[in-house]
Amino acid sequence: MKFIKNTAGVRDTDDAGLLLQYKSTGSLDALGVLYNRYMHLVYGVCLNYFKDEEASKDAVMQIFEELVVKLKIHEVQNFKSWLHVLTRNHCLMALRKLAKNNTVSIDDTFVENTDFVHLDIDDTKEKQLTVMERCMETLTEEQRTSVDLFYLQEKCYKEVAELTGYEMVKVKSYIQNGKRNLKICIEKNSSE
Image (cartoon, rainbow, N blue to C red):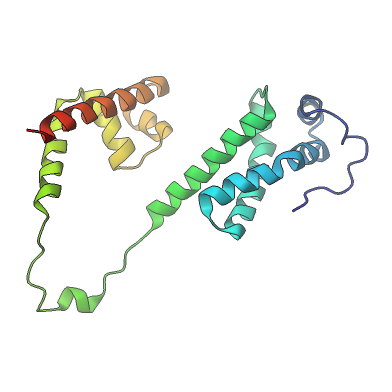
């Protein structure tokens, strides 16, 4: 997978120089050379997440398109590390979006089957859910709201911050502390 073929003059420039050149001139050639150095790594990370070659190739192109915009906004010290984080986040968000759009079709014959008398709910699962509900009530209001939005309603940090009005740093803290407190409470109440 090659990105740019004719790059005479910019191939020998280091990452920082190419970044500076792109930021000052907007040269897509400079950005292309820089991205081409790490494209195989981006593809590898995408392939690791998506397990699909075509989806990974598409992601590589989408990430380049993101770079065109994000590099003008962000101050990047170590391009390789920053690109890895950007790639990982892109893949995770794409997978999260796919999971949200997943639908389950219900077979009409399954629903209308008269032999299907009732659902047997596993007692242990029901007990676990009851314990979790009780433990959710022990969290502070901020933690409970943040954990509910993030884990149960699958909102991202930014969405949680927007919906609650909390600062982003506070949201991350509430989620982390809420998760820890929830785990401790569940472990304590599950053994009883």
